[in-house]
Length: 251
Image (tube, rainbow, N blue to C red):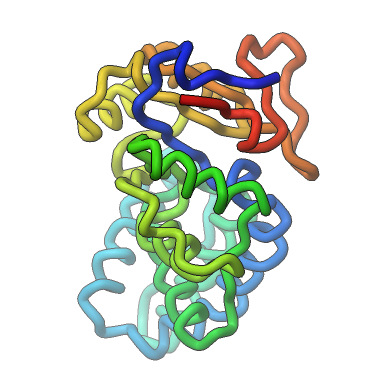
């Protein structure tokens, strides 16, 4: 089903990444395994850096919340630096096993991936219809932004290093969980405010109906993106359904 930007008076588009611009199997089959296999090396090489200290402080806050909820996470690090690294790795893996949308976890993952992109070990992937759509919308003076649970750093790295080239020239803004949860109406109100558009002039595209429900409650237009490998959504989700960005037509 096509979605008309003109009919809806849309001036800004906000895109999810996983299952929307980028195949889910790239995230779970490439990025996540890379983070798992390189986290220990990254920690050992950067253990005394300020940016890592900030990530570990966020992870410590989450750990304490997990303990309060009796979720039995691996013990928080104590003792020598070597012992601390091993404990942090265990907690990192524990969070990843649960696909936790943790700000500290996502920030640390982004820094691990940064090195992978710099080394050429990683290359961002997007669906073939994404680059021409971004270019087309950009030519039409539409504001294009990203809202993902992955960190802003991870978002910028992915779009700067795709097989189709650097796509960041088409993107105006990046939003992650520091803005708020993706299933919270307030997050979308905050995004609209930061973009300086009324929610009714914003289209949010995602593969998850719960995220679209929150955006719709905030007053945004919504479209469910159905890509190969995406998780099935409720049949009565109530959102326009598209299979590729070519179905977003106009102005």
